[in-house]
Length: 114
Picture 1 (tube, rainbow, N blue to C red):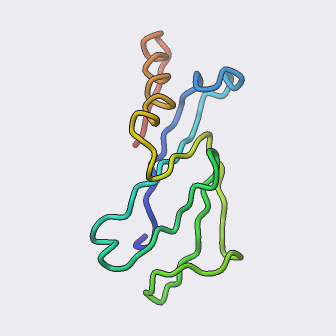
Picture 2 (picture 1 turned 135 degrees about the horizontal axis):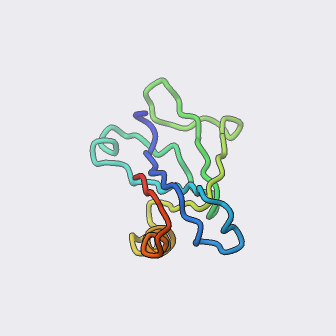
């Protein structure tokens, strides 16, 4: 959507949290910054990382102003972990990529979607 930051989803990473090792599918969200074109159009991001496990989707005024509606129009979605636009690539790799790679080297099948 034109008024929304896209997020990447990553699946399957059981070694991230040993207490949840029985969970074989994990889902993560990483928000991207607005593009230059989006900023030039005055758009604002409609996604907000609330904490390390949830993302709020803010309703956007469809009148073309790019402004957000009131708090009553917020939907919140839970993930295994969330990264906002300021998250360094190294943090994302350490939390998701490295454990997935380690499992692959140990012979466990895995898949990463971005």
